[in-house]
Image (cartoon, rainbow, N blue to C red; front, side, top):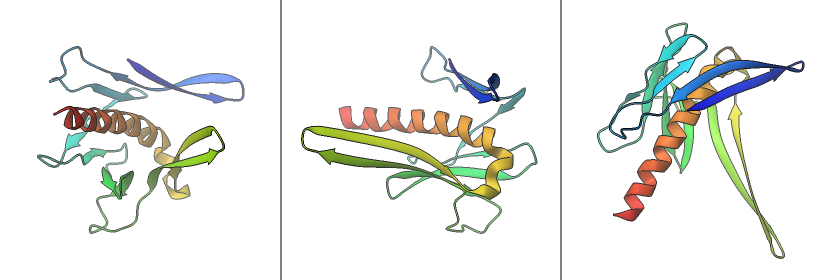
Length: 136
């Protein structure tokens, strides 16, 4: 189980939960607040997954240029993304530092909880698939 919380003025608020099943063939339950989100796989061999937010809009997590990006589906296959996961590698002498950030556009703040929870789910599943692919 993955539980996400956010701190607001010293108070921890529950954002969402991902219930990971024991059987890897079962789909995890993704809950934001009190609402269950169903992430729908959109490709047979690809990793994009789409989901609907509280206001009825559809979004899809995609891998573009080896980065997870969230794009709105109402825009006709636009290049515009509202969230992007980036990693940077800094190396100095004998230290190697990898930092990561989920960059979210200001216009997406109203669905911030959906973005964060769905990203954690999507990124975990994508890493599992990549790991399985590298073992075979």
